[in-house]
Length: 115
Length: 114
Image (cartoon, rainbow over all chains, first blue to last red; front, side, top):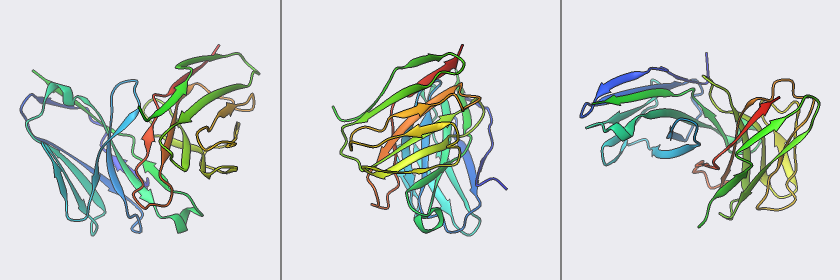
């Protein structure tokens, strides 16, 4: 099983739609979770951290389900500018990596928002 | 402006040649990282450094080398031993051991083999 798994998509949605992505992780000791956004041929940029209680930032909502080991990202009222690849990122605790803040990246879910 | 810079944006390597990718940050971050991204794959960790004069191998260190002589700089050398170097190389940095885990990325260098 991969450490972090995402559906690669693409998800093609009309402007204004609500879209949700899930991501599963294999290491139950993981403690930090993030969603990054990556535009074509650009570097990843932090979209939001994912907290145990769930968190919202404008049209974006992130949730964590530790029991089932997945995180989710919900985008409401999607815009053309939301078109990008969304990377699920999970932190591996330091004691398991022998030191260092190791992040494991999913392969990303591609979103295309259309008129 | 604080941030991470990488140069060059594009780099061409001939067979058997070593090339060095630059990464500089002025965020006062202790930790720095090098990743490689191939089409359809996630980022893979090459090397990381938590503090000056110290660095550790990541998951795919073979054929690469690094140095960390200054806090601001973490250059990556792609040696001739790396048989498939064509990829998008990303440098990142973070506050070490703060528990947040957030890494910030530079704009990347695309390496192409001629």
